[in-house]
Length: 77
Length: 203
Image 1 (spheres, rainbow over the protein chains, first blue to last red):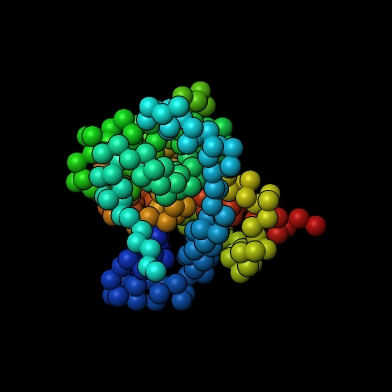
Image 2 (image 1 turned 120 degrees about the vertical axis):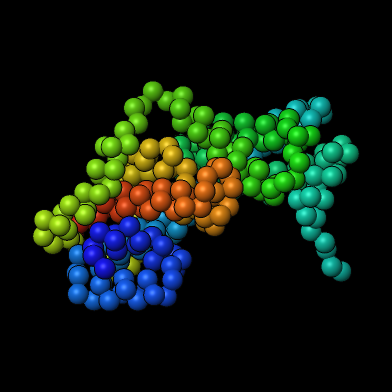
């Protein structure tokens, strides 16, 4: 496989959504292509970093306002 | 004693009969997820709050038209994603054109072709990389994504939904979701590479 084809398949590769055959071909390529390997590793790390950002929960005052608006919308005082 | 947690469908039935506690319970179940989606799409708390309120108002007003063809959470995410996109479009900021964006996405391929040795910053542990400044850079990078890429990336990689759910929410094919996701990730990788390799070279 050429770098071009590898490049397009990298997300499916890191998400493990490709066939075993294609996975083997990519890994064979990565063994001798250091730039493609760096792109795979840094792409994986990029996804992992975004996964690792703590979720932004609703701040308490925003939650209170939301529930108040909902009660009003629902016809309650 | 075993406490049974009502399903979304059970709560919806109760809401339709006028049970306001059921409505509050349903909102509480999803409010953090909607808020996080909005916050990551828009990058600030004020807009995220607007989207949160718009989403639940729209949901309450359209409950009667919800047929249950998709799950409630898919429908809710669809309403939330649309509310976030609407908010995003109200901004006057010019979005990168598709060709500018794709040039950026594929610049790494050009570099690799030209024989440039890429910088590998992947060995650094996540807790070392993920400081406040890096998080700001990551938020900024999301903010540079054109909306059709941003919404896919946030639903898939920030909210952690499967590609098939993202496809249902956005009315896209799974192949289109995967292709947009891949380009968004490559763009973000390029931005983070520029940032982290700059960091690595700093004295």
